[in-house]
Image: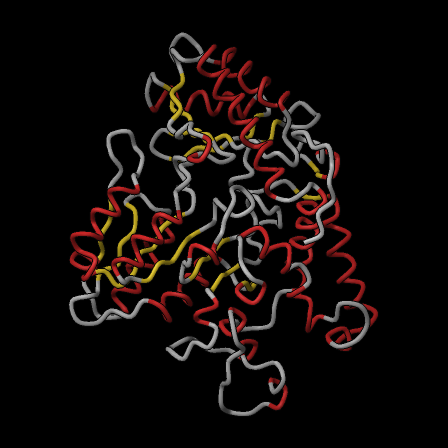
Length: 418
């Protein structure tokens, strides 16, 4: 990744993004990078360039000219690999998150004998749980018996020591652990190195869902030794709704000879167009590709990753993110402590861009406040049963945005909300 050093400040790249409009005009207060990142202004040009290439070259665009489509899926892989702490051959962009999760579990969830449980967190993002249950059923297993879910404690948080304790007692019965990098509802960041050590000790596969972690918090996937990881790119990576997702497969599986669902784009590129009947996989993560990469949804991702590099990379952005969430937490404690509870852990290593807020007066008051904020041009999001998620993103949010949010919460907290 080429890093351009800058004197960075929160929101320094705001003018490089298109911020949605508020109901009364002007920019809204956009605090949902954890759900759908704002659009880079370069995204439209990036897509239009590929549309024009299609118009001018047709099928020849696959092979000729700058960045032919046959190579387009690798254009920004060095930057992406840097963001997730991986080697380039360990990373691939393809499909969408849950499809990639199914592809990985098809290869790496191999229950046998007494080792057949799949361990995940209780309260996981529903799509992950749906995928896990269907995989258990695919193997003829009973989810009521073979799905193990670790519950949060009374603080609504999950604790790494509870996972370690479970694996210490039952690790010889666990075939796979599936864990998030950041818990989607609470915003809690996990110590993935610690979790990986516990999985290695138990002899179980570790898969990670990094939907809320990639582009948000530091990752070191190669070093910690996770077997695989999957993520989407439309949140902190700003690549657009339902954009192409990503996948990591550790290099120790580079010459994987186990089961996989195969497609022609995962076939060795040197003989792919020989059209032979026998599948010979690419080495590394690219061997799990199924179909040709979607050029028009890759283009905005590469445009966004250029901004990450220009901003100085994730180490710079992480520092700014902690400044922003620290400032937000300070103002809430100073001005709103009687009304607002912060669920997200506030230790720097346990929080990312997102703070999950709970209105102390209860769910109905929380929903009312959320709707009032929305009417005043604040776009956060609501997660059942009672969470308002606010995620200031350092590329395009500012400290003034934080001040404005707290002012509006203070103003809109009615007597009923209090």
